[in-house]
Image (tube, rainbow, N blue to C red):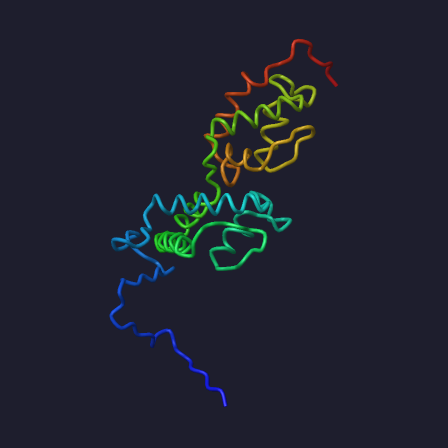
Length: 219
């Protein structure tokens, strides 16, 4: 006859361990700094962990606005990973302790307000460390220019602001314009409503998408 021994987690007792054992909880916390020698859940380490998760989700094909096809980086990747769901296509080097650090910071933000929690989540997953907002906005304007849109082209349906940048900012497709979601959100923010990015792209339009020498005829 075989015997099985069940050990309940709350009954586990350690007899004078040689080294201190740290269990990082994903419960709400007020401070992120852990004891010396343990994983420090501070702002810097959390940002680093977020960047690693961001990169892993991106490489697996998840992107901003992709929720409609099951590829939303926020809903279908970050939130699933935070719940401990194993996504087969996502390969990352983030340790469970780092995930717990992110979860702890996220929970702490939720304690403050739902808005703080949304800000933390958006900053964690939408932050693009490899490019600045200025560079992203420049790339969006260049994409419009490459598609034939320019300053003063509104009368022929080629206005860089009205016919290209504005539709893109509202999540619409623009004919002949290819701009990847990361660049688009890098300029206009996670919800495509960033006023600073809108002004930045509009200001750069005159430089990067000027009217051509020979203007096409009006329709």
